[in-house]
Length: 488
Image (cartoon, rainbow, N blue to C red):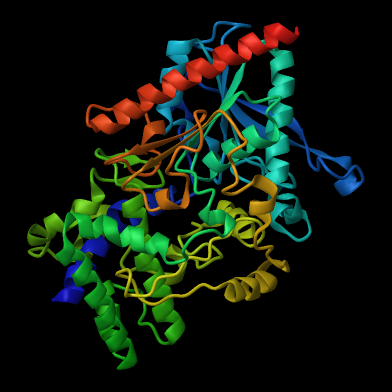
């Protein structure tokens, strides 16, 4: 019964969070966005340098970097520029799920630009060959930041906006990039809002057990019995695997074929753990269409168990899609250098490479401090995987050296916002470091909830957070105007 309890939770989750979106062509980080959904943005391309740091590299080439722009609210030539530092996916997906930025632009008369990260979406420096070796080697944080610095500088000239202060925004990895832009290019960027930016844990700081412990806490805070049931269920799954009762496992999880090895069970564990992770990250108080389709308050799904127990879980899948008759373990989830999941397709390859080079994600689960099966991912395991997959050796500590990690006290004008429901939160900055390095903690807030558009279901905490963010950004814009006038 415990195994069935976890199975119902996971099937519900995967039908509505992962499987249905995948069938519709919208898997995690693989987006086919209907751009007409938000006609205020115009899609454009910027001729970008392929390699900013080697004049003899790759034929001194350029590529078309996509960006979205709207001047709907801009006080031309005077209003600020709000620039989103795109992260690991199609830029339309982030633009359509970061409505706070356009709301703030309406208040402050700002020009809004969403820039796509190199090697993601359609911004592929070498087309479909971008993920070959050595072409993939130009996918670095430093190259991406230089892209944004060049784009901002040249677009300001083209648009007659040389006097417009620039504020950068980003969520998750994009939030990390916003922090780094303020650190590396303070001459270009006047301030940064970094939402849910795990700049500490991704630099190798903190406890490797923290992430999955925090995912577990999200479920335990709703109902401790759910956490305990899931933990026990993984024990039962392990017992079935040790007994090689693969037909039972196939039946329980509606797999296309029975598992036949320890690797297959490992893959199933990873798929299930990734699903719970998505629910915790995207535990918004209303339904969303971001990284798939998610119901409101998905972590509370366990409350639906009584009604689901009267239905066939497999029937939910088939009746919902009419396409699948079973689950293929290896097409729905791909193990990579990020234990929290890379997604599928080209975007997932790009993120896997970044997790093998600069971004450190050696997180583990152990079934003691968390509810998931023991799945270690050590620095050595990362090194072996990355050497085999990408012919690279990771450089632990590089982000700490290059982008300051926890030694940020001499920086300025950065907001670090984090939601208490977000398992990434404790990998970021939770306490203010100075009067201009501000930490905003959002109770009842999931992964960069504050960047999302206002919603009637928003908790009071996120309404207050956005108000505080708006006040600080207003101050920074005015400070930059005064500074520019002083030296003009």
